Image 1 (cartoon, helix red, strand yellow):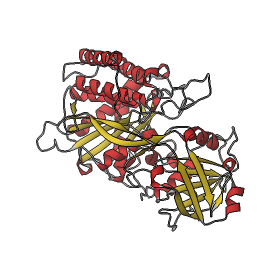
Image 2: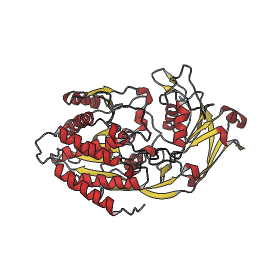
Image 3: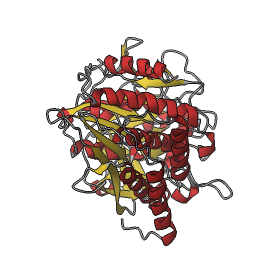
Image 4: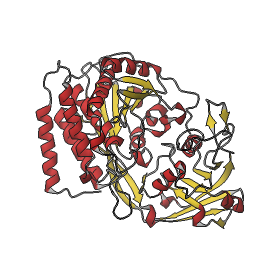
Length: 494
């Protein structure tokens, strides 16, 4: 989508380029100045999370303005464009607004009352026609290695509509919406095994006290975006149907059909990709990837008088700013291996940008030594940061050591049962058996809310997280042995 950028924005971008160049530390041997790093992080997050960028939805004017800003910062830092002389890796996106769409659900030909379901589309192009799938009932649909439960074992779910009941054989945590016994965990497990539609039988479609239905109702109004053309099974995100049990029982098991009539607009979105080439002729074709997603939820429709911009300061202007700052530090003294700076869009729509990148990588996946991903790193509890390294103990151990040296306590994934590897931009790399680590400072009350604003970021602690991540990247850039990759038993892919 071509955006006419007004003179004000061109002036802002040029000013950002000048300021970034002025603040850059020129001595390649000097360590990062903590105060200067904090100021740059604050400046980056404040800009990216400003109302002027309208929540950086994919695709949107605000997302394109964010990409322009990222380009200027990378250029000022001395990071070269990585995509045939450009910083932009563009891809086609179809999108529509759910409120303007018409959805019809049928079970064995019987039309379901609209009040008996909530449908959330993720990744499905209406132009492909209706979903018409045989159903597979899987009980609660729980897969939990920790509890030695696997209700999907031995089931052929590829291309099916998987039907699971809400609940578990044990009490549910009342406020949780992640975990193997909740909708997100059950959906992820089914999608990882090739399910094309997840049907969740629940009575609580309109219960404001129910965390799961609240999350789904919120996502129902978010604009839908999807890759064109589709990349099959590129992520574990797909259509979800919350359905009242009585409606399912009335139709009977068999075939479930979902028809979507929508006015789809086609546009373009971009990943922003830069590189710092290595100095060693024998190692420069090996890469360390540092990544973050720079998109957020945009400006979904809200009732009159409410804040309609979802600024996404922590999610994920924080990670984006962290990657920019890490890149600035490396650019002052390139390593023996090469660094790829990968800032993806479309994460909130179902990992679109990282899925597209994995299908057309700038640095071949076999030549990537490690991926370091930063997502929501601006709101630590004290000095703690989680390091999710589900496929590489070596990366986790290194993160712990680097954290100690920079005043950060690196802790293991506090919720390994959430299987966050499926839900982040590390998924595309883990599928290719690239060792990867994901820095994260945990969820908070402002997660996916308009209240996620720049004034709530803890910039000093964030700068220490960047320093620890930069030390990790530096070790591999300077020639440290490739870390190991260990595939967990639970990590399955279609």
